[in-house]
Amino acid sequence: MAEDVAIGELWRAAQAARAAGDSVGACRELDALLSRAPAHVAALRARASLAPETERATWTERLADAATVESLDIALALRDGPMAARAEALARRAIAERPQLARGHRMLMDLLRRQGRLDEAAAAAAAAPDTPETRATRAALLGTPGTSDVVEETPPIRFVVRDGFLTMARHAEALAFALAGGDTLETAMVGGDDSEWKVDPEARRARAGYELAAVRDWFLPLVEAELETALPGLGLAPFERGETELQLTAYNDGEYYRTHADRDDRGLTGRWVTFVYYFNHAPRAFDGGELILFDGDAARGTMRSDAFTTILPVDNRLVIFPSAAQHEVRTVRCRSGAYVDSRFTLNGWFQRA
Image (tube, rainbow, N blue to C red; front, side, top):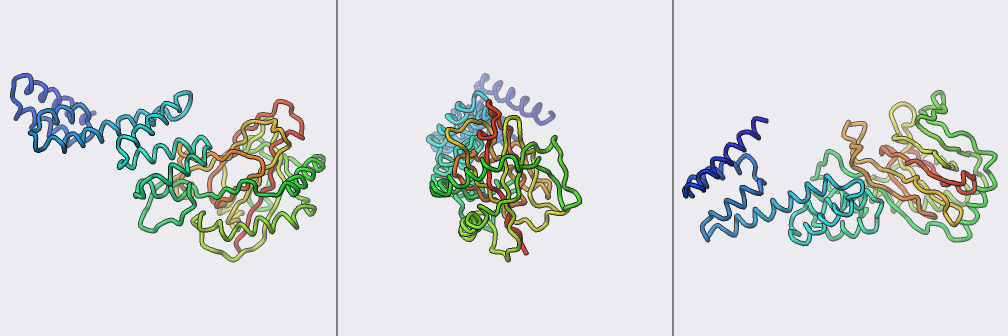
């Protein structure tokens, strides 16, 4: 508050000096103001107008940068809800006008990934400059190896997506298995070690099956074949593998899984890499059910609930991500409520030995 008052006083003094024709005094007050608020657009505009010809280009550049940052602050406030398209337009304009400013690129990448527009987000990442401000987000979207010289408090969670993962025949086999096994599914549980597993409808509503011999022998080798190439994109080193878990999960109307991690220090210490294969009966009869990967590290207290990547549950899509990542399944809406119309997954975990 005191800083705002001081800036206001300096601005009024500069305006008074200008009105009195004292350009030297006005510049002095404006310079003092800009030392406290370097991106003050009105002050930069006034200072540029008072600068000698030899300095005007420099002040004009600073003004353009500050005006772009100001528009991106507006975009940040609009990024969720009905004005998201306006926020995207502001970010794209910022990139067009000031392509050297990393913040515009970062804003566009964040807007697109929050909406689950992964292909567009990856294209934006490929076009963004490789700077400390953009590097973590680019790596998450492009699957490129990270660099040790960049430390970001809340980096995006790294993930790998494989669309069209199964052949049509294998997809049909997985779907037939899921549809035939509806009566065998149990209420899905949450927990850590075997003594902690429990039904908790506040945390999770879904049904799950664990007797998967009919698909396990052919499905797991296909996922395992993806693991080695996926690890660099996840920012993980190769590891000695232990058990691989697999389950069938069905989410129907009103069902969800609140924010959680698949690996923790209480009982699920072995899970290292999570995989989720989405499939459904066509045409799809549900909405929602998006996978949300939250930025940061909850164990270190850096997770941000307002910064995330949305991954849509697209039919025949495989997603792989670190098991320590905080994530959730958004509520599914299925008007029919029929089991056949559920959001199905074959999901599991590669454990570290």
